[in-house]
Length: 159
Image (cartoon, rainbow, N blue to C red):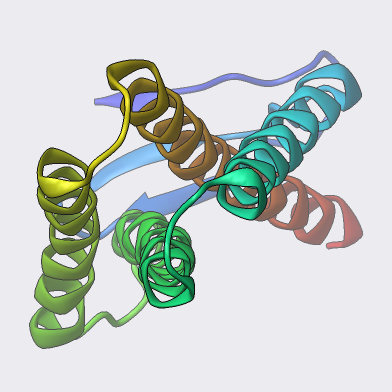
């Protein structure tokens, strides 16, 4: 079964999906508006989380814990998205790294939940940290996807 999405005068570019053996044509670049919105959401989430930590009345080691979880979560979310995309494009991905990426993403969320559950913070503060963390992770995935989509289409157009 073939799925084709192409403009009138564009040469069809086919990417072989190794997992399903389906020919897929992909030529839809993310719009600048969506790319900009993704970057703004990422920056807003990270900046909000960090401002919240800076203004929080907690020990420095607690602030370091939450900041480290944010960095760990961002890295693991991007790693998961990269591994998923590599598999779709037929690039080699070791199952160990793929599994570690998923484990790290879930571990960062779990560690944040455990930390906030046991923290001596107002419920509104806990909600603030949770929402800015999730916004950051989601937008990091969107930014990574947009970057890969744009690079993929640019490479196809060069050929």
